[in-house]
Image 1: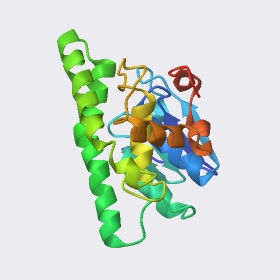
Image 2: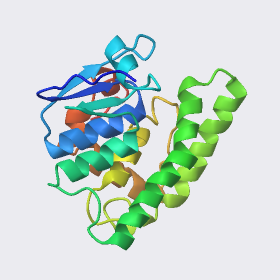
Image 3: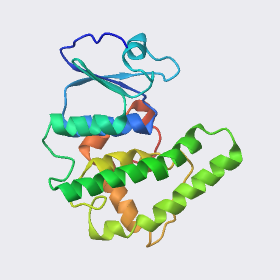
Image 4: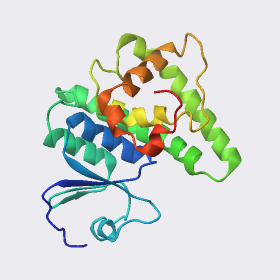
Length: 212
């Protein structure tokens, strides 16, 4: 394990194409954190990251003598370190439910995104693309009841889901244009026009969609 060099500011080593890195950038923008965001090629990771992160992975967040290298841990750390606006519910039951939704996104949807984006086998990519679409369609009714994911307020769950939804077009996944998907499309509109989301986008990510 390397020796951590103390810093006067927070530094975030981010993959500008990756949805895991993107979710943390949304939190940073939402909180208005003063941070040095360094866009890193995942195939050419800086020596500094390699020395401090035992997994030599992205994203990596350095805050003085603290080094974090798991995106959900970063998000919760930032929410506690910079409490306004809060991005997790106040009450323990609601917080636990939000963490479970984040866990399900991580287990159910994120691997499908990874396979579509990075996969080499065309059949597996096609199956993952279809599986992701098929799993998104059933959740559309929840946005008829609440403006955000199972919540009246924007939360860390939305920060996890927004980068995936933003990448649908780039992954060649098209939502059917019908009444069933209208609430999901309206939810996406709320996410994508949010100022923090706009600020979180890298140049590469901006080119992923024709609109917005």
